[in-house]
Length: 78
Image (cartoon, rainbow, N blue to C red; front, side, top):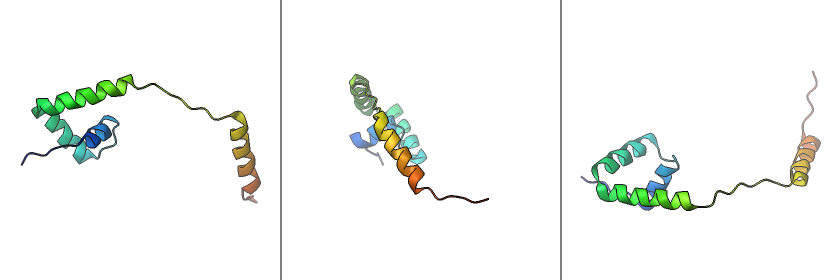
C-alpha cells in the first residue's frame, strides 16, 4: 500500500514536529518518490525565502511581568 503525504505533514516534518514513526515513513517515502522529493524541496526553498523575524518584548512589559510575579509569589518560610 502506497502512503501519500500532505503538504501539512511535509511542513511538520521540515520543522521536526512529526513523531518518530511519521519521520521514518516520510524519510522512506522521500527516498522512493522523486515527485514527493520535488515537492519537499519546493517547500524547503519557500521556507528559506521567508523573512527571519525575531520578536523582543518591550522592557516595560518584562518588568510588569516580573513585578506581577513577585507580588503574587507565595512566601516560603524555612
